[in-house]
Image (cartoon, rainbow, N blue to C red; front, side, top):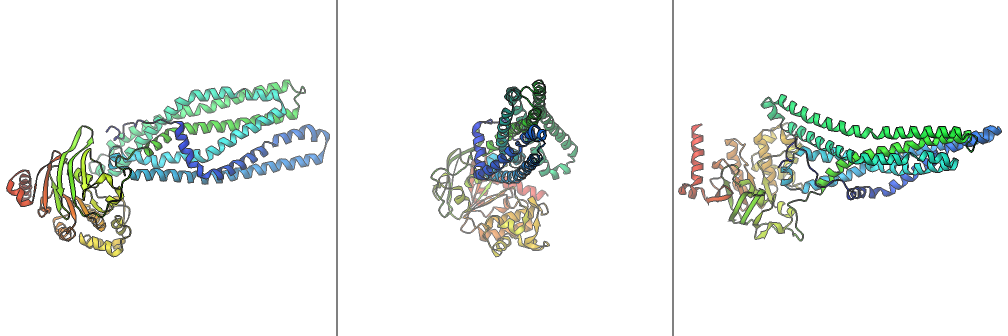
Length: 593
């Protein structure tokens, strides 16, 4: 799992290619009419603008020598008109491209976020969340200008070059050929730089991803950092990660800024050649008006080339981010609806494991040929040492992971034959890691069933004895809590998560260490609420505090990926096996304190 570290560079499985360009252009397609109109406006503005130097040429070679004041006034008005049309075109382009760019980015980010919702636990287990976050926010933002303004500018600038080339050829063919002589040199230089730049910007994306991962991890674990006075060590690590990002960026920038001197030097050489040739050919097919107009055109000729070089740099830069975005979007969910999957019928609650094997990593089995059958309405407790496979069993029932071999059946139906939504909508799960979302307490409880009324939310909270502490808060159920519920105690967060799970009115209820952070007094109250709620509901309870599961219909002792023994509390105590030893050791520990 090497990539699950902030200081390990991510390797690309598929590098940037033309098919990815086609995928990007698919996001532009819905706005093709708006883009076509913008391009048309810009082309009209471009043609109009570059009529200006030709107007100046007519004024210098015809109107002024003849002293034709009327023609000179008309030419002046015409020239002002070209400037106004060009200004309107630029204003329209700025507004239109900004609108399209943000719409395209909105759709791309929506699709990426939607795909992330489908990816299983294994995806999030295998990489830092900061490396995922940077793709949704930073990388997509980088594409905004490229996908809107960049495409329009590309087409406009290419057309502008053709317009200028036409006017230059119209003025003087020989001078035009001298002006165009620098283009093959420029294209060759850009081609040679392409691969170097792409690799350097790939490295920038890796280092940015690493830094984002470490910052995210550090902020999430800030309480632990300060508890152990690790600030100085963390600062040193961040300095290293930050410096690596800076070095990668500076190397990429050096390759980036090489393009502009190349364009600048070629333009200076070509312009100088035009000056020399124009002066040498003055009055030999080149008039003063032609030379001045030509120099104006050649000055404008290199501006689109600057813009195209800038677009090229942006594309090379963006390619490193496009690779990462599509790599994420192409990540195949290891747990997904199979072709032909049907909706799960209303669950009665029979659960069966048939020769189930499972491994998080190949060659390292967490479960080995686990077999058991649970009848509807039974309460099953899973106990055993940490890492024995208890949480893995309940994760397979919820199909957060798929079995490596064997079957998990609910009411005789293989979980892989039904849709995930229809399965999980009939289950209530409270995991070890209780997560509280930013918002009100009532919205956090209602998260499991959005159509629940306030009365139903409060009833669920009362059942788990969360109601009493909630109503004591300044705004009761409408009290705002921060992400992860930082203003609540660990026990209070677990009670809210408990209410959330119960509100869903599940046919199968899974409680993973549900009472681990609740004090003994509150635990007794919760047990009273659960006694009523567990009736006619199949339940799986993982608990290290054995006093909480003594009344379970069956207790399974899990160790080394299998069921060592199973039975009621009394049966297992009489056997004096693994459960007996665990219970006695815990009882003696509690007696000692």
